Image (cartoon, rainbow, N blue to C red; front, side, top):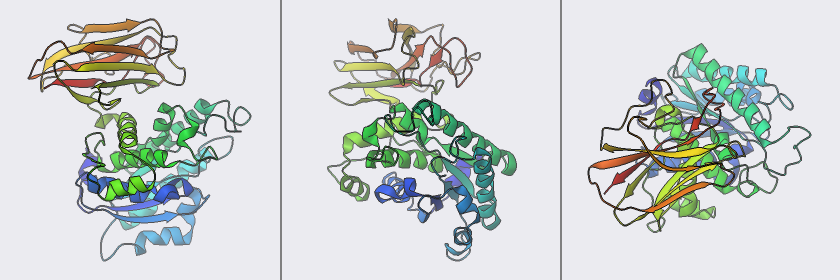
Length: 396
């Protein structure tokens, strides 16, 4: 991939444009740096150009913001990536100007590339206000309505940049999609119901890390007992190991489909897996052993698939030889010719859970598990069903 080849260069130089959504809780830039170090990446050089309340037009046209491109790096160094976070309403029609938002995103990339011709762009997709915010229903009908508008225009801005500057120039870091999968719970926001609480800043930073480094976060080793720069930073914000793993699972689920090994439709449908007494979350790879208690949980989020009948499907395969996605429906990762139906349910108003003591061991083999709901997918256009990302359960 063009994007991956560039962003794997050592010693990344990262320019961050944003406002208080980026600067709160110690800043997403600082957290991305620490996540990178924890993952074994060379420490990036970060330059923060945050301006409270400002939009992309400010970052595109203000003389100081533009000058930072040429005067913030030593010698002849160039930028690897510019991260752009717009004002939280500018990508909406009711309170912003989506056309200007998209145009200014292109301007910023042009400004950066006039100095660093190979620089990439990461758009930091913001989120809808929390449930209970006064914007609903007068300004926006619901959080889903606000979310869909923001997401659509960030995706269009990403497409604009890739059309103008070439494929692979830009990627959308879908932090707002992660907030949607958490159903806009007030507890992940500040008391004002729109700024991020520390747990949301962690989620956002993980989404940005994934987009910049082309690497998911569930596999990053971390121990809160052993400490370290990242752990100390998280602890100072009141975050713990459970919060880390929960947000990593959501961030990986929202990563670009090209980074997810077995991507599903991408709708408001979530598969979680794990073994008790361990964690059960959306991280897509877990080891299993005979005698463990395996938990699979399929959930409809934001009410989208509450009334849909649904299935938990599985394939057993030799390690390294997973089934190929369906040719007709690439979001279906299960081989329908050899699949097993583990469990079915008539609705998803409450999560569909499947719990079983692992009855045997099968070293050298894995189980691919995917959730399917009989309801149309807004992401793929499939009028019949939508699917979760598939998980791999590897026998130990």
